[in-house]
Image (cartoon, rainbow, N blue to C red; front, side):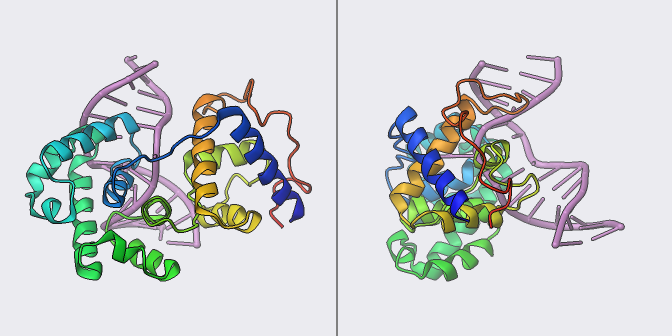
Amino acid sequence: MARTKDWLAEAYRRLDDAYGDQHWWPGETPFEVAVGAILTQNAAWVNVAQAIAALKEADALSPATLAAVPLGRLARLIRSSGYYNQKARKLKAFVAFLREEFDGRMEAMAEAEPGGLREKLLAVHGIGPETADSILLYGCGFPVFVVDAYTRRVLVRHGVADEDAGYDELKELVETGMTPDAATYNQFHALFVRVGKDRCRPREPRCAGCPLEPMLAPEGGVSSR
DNA sequence: TGCCAGGCCGGGT
DNA sequence: ACCCGGCATGGC
């Protein structure tokens, strides 16, 4: 246990030193952040940014205005983000949830108890574990760690997590190994993405020049205990 | 050209 | 409880 904790602290320090502040998710509003979390599902951020710009241009980036946009028009606006028909429906489902549960106010949602809120979010069509946690962390400011494909790849490749570890397992691994802090989780996740894009690419067995390269895996290999 | 990108749903075993 | 096909655009 202590070893995983140490690995995480060391990894954070190295990545932070190597890459610096990432200013992750500079969304203008919490609602914009939530929209981005849905649009970025299995999509490149550049395409998502374009979709968000289109929504902004159409004045459809608030809970009330987005709710008023017809589904077909919404789908066209977010076309660049891919899976646009699916995502249009997902956005509608989220806005309906926000309006029903929290009067359409993200600030009200951020007052909720995070554990219960997470369950509610997961029940919304189109919101899975990563999207829910992204909304909780980046949209509401809760100290919740977000796991994604990059996080998984880096942790597995460095022997910190097992190949077949599930989402919740990886999330627990980080959350139990670090003191809960939204700003730190924000930066750590951003750093995983950065090193994942930069050095820890799929199909490439070695991570040449990776800031984590000289690190030893935690004691006992992949176990988090 | 093929693979990848800040996943999730629904139906099947 | 897993496993898998489907969803779709834009960049390298």
